[in-house]
Image (cartoon, rainbow, N blue to C red; front, top):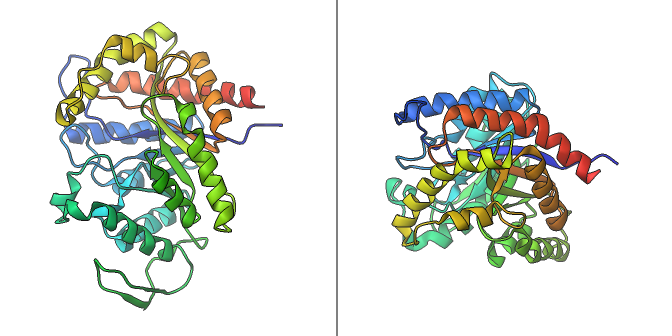
Length: 344
């Protein structure tokens, strides 16, 4: 029986360097992201996701605008967020923007909602970080109501109520495919199950197999809440090249720069080459290597966690655009068929 798992890619629009070492501008990076999305469609990938950030090292602050540009130059690939920081946005505007994208792309839009691992958007848009948890819970509650094909009546503490409000444009086909992204806390997993929404696990470190209890918890809670079974996906970083050694040598300096830059902000010690090698090993959460190596790791993760979707976060710090394009090409033409063969 053929494998039905969907294989996609994600990017935050990491600001990269040119072949001569010059750092690209955010505008140049955004144009490159559009080209990467077009290539992802050409090589047959299922999904292309872009993540929202408001920082100098990530260029994408308006995901749906980037995705709309890609939508006009692609025909098959689904396009979505990875993630939209719902806590600091307005749920109605998020729905409207992605419903518009869904119309432009002939039904190919998806929304991945999350709290975000960075907090720059909160002061930028006038939100109090003290309300971090409540903002997400209340806004997700409203967004879940917007997904129903009927006028919305809703009330909460942090915004004015709605009474039989119709939101335009309505989602063509009745609803938007909407995921809830979580970093692995049981509370977040239960929240996704409560709303009956697909679960997207961000696995960026440690062993992917350790998330098995969360996928089991999610399925158990869906049943308890009398919700239908929903897809489970994983978002993890990686890089594909012709050989394992080439992939690791290409990725290492850029991966280290990214991790150490974020680590300085958060008080982490510098990442070591040994840690990188362990993450890129058979049990780690870095899918870096030849097509055969990456395919085996993805197939193992899909089997262990019971996944319907795996998205490779292909941009890693200042990894150059040319290496990224080759990685996407190999992922679509080599890795995806190998994964389907391994899971058949």
